[in-house]
Image (cartoon, rainbow, N blue to C red; front, side, top):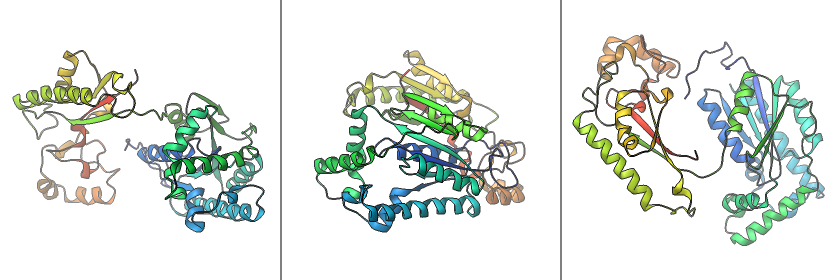
Length: 377
């Protein structure tokens, strides 16, 4: 998680109150991907976040239903689906008011202006701030790829022939197109994502937390890439943070072998994922600012690869427990151990940075990893 700067009396961050993110758009436009990705990001920030999926509610209550149930002219089916959508919205409101939540993500189509205004007004009555995120896709190849890669593997199409599933889902989309209304009410706070981030439009978005959400959406991508995590080499002093020791001879040998392994692995798997250009992307190496990380990455730099240092990857300072075993910490700081167990995210040991004890061990800490990323640069 990111370091939490402070905690309000209500437990919510940034004095933002309760926030509801409402997805908008036709099926197969990436709404669920945005919802889940944004949920992970906000949780990483320490914000209590949960996705409420209208589709999941519908499957739980109705199971697999025939395609004509998605026809807006089917009055009975429409009434049942609207009831399920309303129950999902009510559950989100209850979670925000009584369940300790701060950001609820309402994952549904919400394709009409009337429905969006209805949702906005209902949330406003409960003192919940809204932010609409509309996913628009004008490139049919993206929609088709999304249907093939995600939708036909959903619970709605278990046991279906893939080609028949594609046809059925495409027909489902066509039924909604004639009723779809893009967001035009500038009184609503909204973000429009065109072609999965190719263009972004922001309107009437206020507040620090909402601005962080917009910033994340501006950097969201769906292009496949690979990320490798690797341990740094062993140092001359494995137990001390303050010492910032050099790599040992064994550590330098490991660094050379790591470079050889990664380069050979990339060469052997070139184009294996079905994308012949995938392995042509430059290899970038991200490390922390610690000496052991920089020295582990040195063979990559000598081979001509970009090596970048980022302070956010640096091991957290354990303070006065530096170099101690867990047994010694329990003996010397019994009260601190209790506080850590009661609130591990916000607790810190004397003179330490905020660091959950579960992540710290003198011989194995999360910050001894270097990040090697395949990037478009």
